[in-house]
Amino acid sequence: MANYFRDRNKLIILIFLLITFACSGAVSLALQHYLTGSTKFINYIGLLRGTTQRLVKKELMHYPDDEMLSKLENLVNGLREGGRGLRLNSLTDRVFRGNMEEVTLRWEELRNAIMSGRETGKDGGLYLLSEAFFDLVDRTATSAMIFFENTQRQAVTAAAVSYTASAVLAVCGIAAYVQFSRMTREKDMLGRVAYFDPMVKIPNRASCKREISEISANPPDGTATVFVFDMNNVTLANEIAGQQAGDRIIADFGGILKEEGEPFGFVGRFGGDEFLALFRECAENTASAFLKTVNERVLSYNLLRLGELEKISFVVGFVTGNPAQDGIEGMVDLAGKIAYDRKREMRKG
Image 1: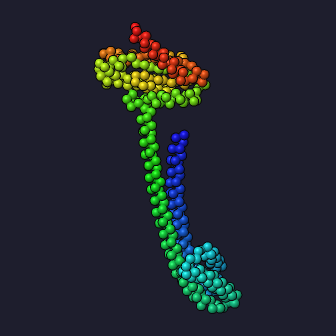
Image 2: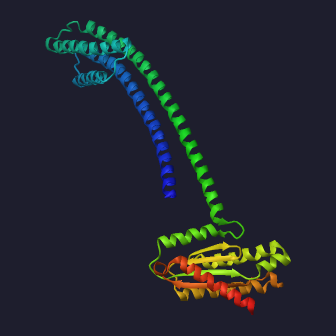
Image 3: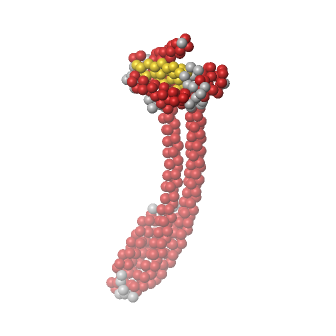
């Protein structure tokens, strides 16, 4: 359950950061799209003026160009539709919109004059109309530039505010993630200290108790084996050779049990010179094979030691049964009693 909440909190922080960066990216794209659109809009106005000049020149020389006329129609319609989607926030905006509406009206007059001239062969004031239209287009271009400059400043300000807010939120999110990770590491470290034996580097007595409780709460369906190892000469080694001598053989024996036992299940220091191994789904033949390997490792270890107090000596009691039926606590107690009885018999001998 702790891992679930830990992972969920990390996921929430990461999603928060992703949303922050996504919002910043969306603002960037929107600003880029707006700037591209405004540039295109102003270019269209300039293109309208230049194309109209060419068309009027051709019409006055009686060289009609329907393709160019159609192109101008499309330019005017595009500008009119684009202008309708603009927001009006100030007097500058309304001047620009008014100019755009007047461009549409004056174009209709100019177009009608062109069509009339084609039918009658007379210019019908086409030149004067074109000059007035050119002047209007120039004024519209100027008002458009002012409009887009104002809007661009607003957009840049909004983007700056968005980026700043995103940066602050990102920093807060990263700081929260770092803090959470640090707290998690500290909690894990405390957990390791609480459930880990630093000298032998295997789970300690608290871990043994926790493992017993977990098996008791959720016993395996099959056969399990419990081992209790009790070392023999640790007290004597401490008294004669010092505490370090006893700690050394405890640590070395624990290392052997860890290497050989972890593939099968749980191995921990049960306290002092006692070790506990709990193997789920472990039949008696597997338990015997494990003990044989441990004895061989201890024999090899002892061959390299000259003094008796440097050698590992132990007794073991193990019980194979069904924890669901026999109870894991009862199996541990029985394995411990077997080890204790064997140790007492050795002392008598």
